[in-house]
Image (tube, rainbow, N blue to C red; front, side, top):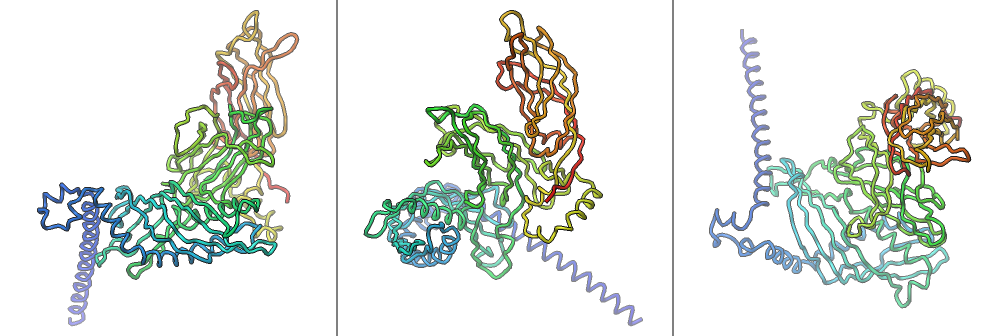
Length: 569
């Protein structure tokens, strides 16, 4: 009996402890949530709100100031403590930035280090502060501080060239305007109410500086000034610019979840551009494209140059690492190659990654602008055509990736290809993901049915038009042609053609509509497409507007029958 009584009391005590623990966790969670709401509410309070709660005499003088006066007060306090901030920040910058400078050191230099580093006597000025509501919740609070600094720092770099010449280079006339983000996370019920602070340069609006050799002119050494300036900008970008963030631990704990981690990949197919502005006096522009998410040299991708062409076709594929899909964007810059001279910008465009639906290919035409920051110039500069696919990590097996050949293979096909690849696996251990993808060739049969055209323009002087269609596989240059339909602006062909495609990821279908004449032919317009959609959907029918024609559409039906193979090593 005593055993059962003891067992009963033990169960009751255990249940009581579980209920008490659950109740404590609930109360603790509610306190954290209430704390976050209180902090956010105080951050949103205006002077008028505070005066409704208590009269002015209960507050320090700076509380009853306007926001401009609050910023003035904040800047006055910063001026007072700036000598101490300068000492600590200078050492922090030296320790954090110097290794990154060495990482991005130009090949023409043997070493690049600080010999002097102080931030001077002029403190930065805060020009704005705000709470980011969308980023603030029961787990943390996010603030953004807008800052301007026209300082008088004493920064000298000791630069040693490959030929043994040592140059002391001063960084002068620094002008900076930007927005710093502070993340107080996690919120805890222990003073100072947060476990760590993360800081980052959220937006770099302006960063200007000049370089000067002590006792000389840096411009007398060709290329050195540009190389050093690019290195400094890369170091700023890689060390502190968002999404990179630095974490300062306030209370003991594990804050590894706050560190920057890749969250996915962005697959980009640069298809083509059209109607580009001509930058050359003689001939046409020689365009190429630079693409990046973060403007670091090792993360920027460059297309091949298409000579003497304002409607270039690239059909090139690139892959990028994504670290924050809510704030990052893909930047596209189109240049005109000028040979040994500096390339001239034709135009640029951006795509916010938050606009992309994970696992779904987005086909976009981006209008080019002169400047992404100040868009006052409304001149038409052409368009660039991209296919984009965002693939978050952990979702690779949920959706089909048309840019990854192996995603469309069955289990048995993957196993068969893997067994064949294992024979040479030793030499492939160092390959990147992109190189491994190229081991499988997306081969198959493309069936194209030219159904009809509608609303074709009149091109004959005596009559309408005598249209026919030419189909071309760009890579293999295989061609097929429909019959000619005389005197018809809305022809119906219903003819089907099969093409054996050896490498579908790098091939394109070009469909041209021509007018047949007795003594020749005249192009009416054309349609250019990648095979991404038909690989993804397997089969579809759609109408396509004719490029280069005043009017007209072409109705096509496409079907893909895959037969993937392993690429020979």
